[in-house]
Each structure stands twice: as C-alpha cells, then as structure tokens.
Length: 243
Length: 243
DNA sequence: TAGTGGTCTAGACCACCAC
DNA sequence: TGGTGGTCTAGACCACTAC
Image 1: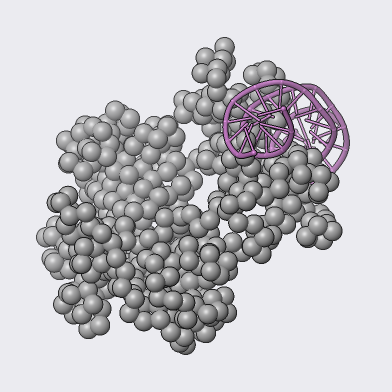
Image 2: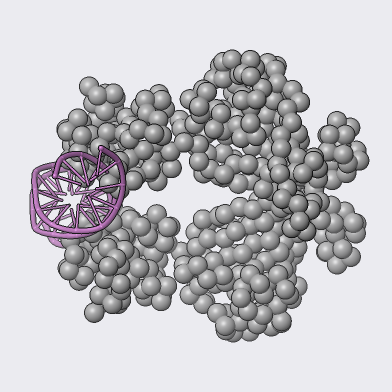
C-alpha cells in the first residue's frame, strides 16, 4: 500500500523494502532538510513493522549520507553535502599567507547545445545545457570549466537570472530542480593547453595542464552532470582517500 | 576482565567498548583470515551482553572492512583487501588487446636509511627501510617507486629472501609482520623527469611525469608506509570515487 | 543435523531537544 | 514535559554452511 513497500519484491527483507521506499520518497522530493521525516515509531506503525526494523532501514540511508539523525529532534534530509569544489585541487599561487584569496566565478557561456561525445556518453543523452566558466583566486584565473547537464532534468536552467548562479552549483541543482548529487567519480589526467584554454588561464598554448573529468550522480544513481575542468599542472595537487 | 571491555571508559556504550575490544584483539594478531572469530552467541555470553549488542559491535568492524560475515559459517578477519596497485592508473602502451601484458616488478634497492623529509613527516620517524623498484608491463617500464617503511614495525625486512618480495607488498606486510593496511591517502601531482627516473622509465629528462604520493595506515590509524611513484604523464588516468 | 549469521519482534530505559 | 533518537534486552524463526 504505502508507496512501494508492499508492492516491492516480497522475497526481499522488510528493512530493504522500507529503505527503498523511503529512498524513492526522498527522490520524489517529499521532504526538505528543514522538516524531519516521520519519527521511527510513526513509520513502524505506518508500515506495520517493529521499530528495530525501521531503525535498520534508516541506518542504511544515514550510511549513504542521505539522512541525518538528530537525537531528541528527528531525522532529517541531508542537502547536497559533499565538498565537491574542484578548486581545492589547485594550490593558490599566492601561498605566502598574505592575500586572503577570494575565490570568484565568471560565467562565460550558458546555452542549450548538442553534447560532445564524452558528455553524451556519460549522461546518456545529447540534449544538454552547456555552462562555461572561469574560476579565479584573487583575480588570478585558476580553473577553466565546461559543464554539461541534461536539459530534461534542468528545464529552464538557461533562463535562470544570472546572479542566482553562484560559484556552487550543487546547492542550486537541489533548490531549483530537486536534483540531489549523492556521489561522483573523478578522472585526473594530463594534457596541454590549446589556444582557448591558454588565453583564459593566461598561460601559453602547449603549457602542461591538469585535467579533471567528473561525472556526478543523483540519489537514484542516474548521471546528472558531466564536467571537464582544466588548470595549470604546476601547483596542481589532487587528494583522495582510499578505504 | 575480558580484554579492555570492562576496563574501557564505562560511560561509553557497551557496543563501542566491545567493538574497540575486538579491534585491538585483531590488531594484536589473535585471529587469521582462515579461522572464524567466536560466534555472536559465544561473544554475547563471554561479554555478558545480548546478541543484538554483539551484532552492532561486529557491524561496525564489518563496515570498516576489518571483518567479513559468512552466513552459516562464521565471521572472519579480512586480509589486506583494497586494490592498492598504482599500476592501474597508467595505460598500457600496448592497448591493442593482443599482448596479455604480464606485470613484473624489479627490485633495485632495499636498505635501512634516514628517511627524506616528506617520508619522515608522514611516518613520524626517520628510521626507515627504503625500497626502490621498477614495475613493468610486458618489459615496458611503467612505474618507478620509492617506498619507505618504519624499521620499528618491519624488523628484519631487509634480510627477507628476495623471492618473498612479490609485486604485492601489502599481503607481505600482513603475513610477515602482522601489519594490516586499512586505508590510504593519495596525492596526485605533475612534474618532470630527472636523470635517474628518466633512465629507468626510458623517457627523456624533462618529460612530463605523473606523481602519486601515498601514505598507508594500519588498523589503529598509524601511518606505516609512505611511497612516491612516478610514471609518464602521457596515458596517465587516475580514477577516484567521491561520496 | 548442529551451528552460524540474517531478519524481526516487542518491549525497556536513557539522553537529548524543543516547547 | 512529551517526543525524539540511542542503547539494550531476550527471545523467535529463517537461510545457509559444514560435516
């Protein structure tokens, strides 16, 4: 009855069905990070399972980073959380500790286009919106980014007022389009600057470049963004944890 | 009584104390990956807690990747598990699909030395054993590695018979020294080849290099290895998951 | 068939938070 | 003070493995 719980494959354990059921309610945007989801006791009664089973279901979503427990208060949706800014991979040229290094973002282009091959392959469609921007640190250009998002999921993105496009896109995706980035994969490689990139980054064509290609996925593991970012290979440093 | 369980901070929940207690028994090398740890029922009786509490403690260690449950059989220690070879980030030159590309490892040096600054900083000591090796794919040198491990934790490493040093070091650390690598951090950067590296990799001095610096940690989060690996930046591709 | 982990229940009491 | 999540219990039955 309740939202796919009884509709799911009944051979699956109850806590799995409940977890998936909650997960799709989240994906559908039923809750916001401000209001708690129903309490464990309420869910237990609603789904006719014990509280322990609800806990196990919720535990799974907490582990995935989708939900957040607050003792005494409730369980809440976690907004776009992971620190995804590509910025931190490029050392600030001015590491003398003097300048506060204010990061900024300059929008160069935003329009509906046919996706290039790599973006189309990652996103599974070639109807995309392309965003090009230049990111700087205290007026020094550091990172040149091309971003592709599927038009179908971001209807009306091109006509968003420009000031709304801050440097952080993931919160914007969430608030305006209900798209929650849950995970991403990065691929770091090496290349050389072409005319365009060199001009933007104020380096010479042929200079060494660090390239990061990222595919971002939403809650349901659908790819929702592909981007390619380039910066000078000098001073580049990419950190990664392996478990 | 039992191994720090009752000795731990009694304000902590039982399942935390039990988890830490099991964790230190693992660190002490009490169990091997072949024999199961005591069953949940046995642990419950031994520690005078309910089975549910034991499950929660064990769950924590399973999540950390230390233990592995096998239904119907028991719960076992997981050996060094993560796919740690830096190899996979460098494209095989012969990607024509013909040659099976047999990886090999050539030991160049192994001796006790004073650690260079970066290694000493990561390991917290400068008494280390240095291992230098060249890794190849079908006789093409691909990766030049310098590895530093603290002498204190690897007593007698220098005198290990050379055939024992296979291409995979982490299983060796575990079997000969009881050191289990649980996690690691990688830092990717780009540079240019010096004379030595260029000669080993059969490239030109000044050619672009991809550099990976890795610090590996054991169960108790003590750094136990620092390594720096270099390969040609051409064809280099570092993949990483972000959650 | 005996023993193991996997699921699930129906409670209890506690710590914490908001009102 | 009432409701929330956090811990813990003492069982039950099931699925699976090893012998």
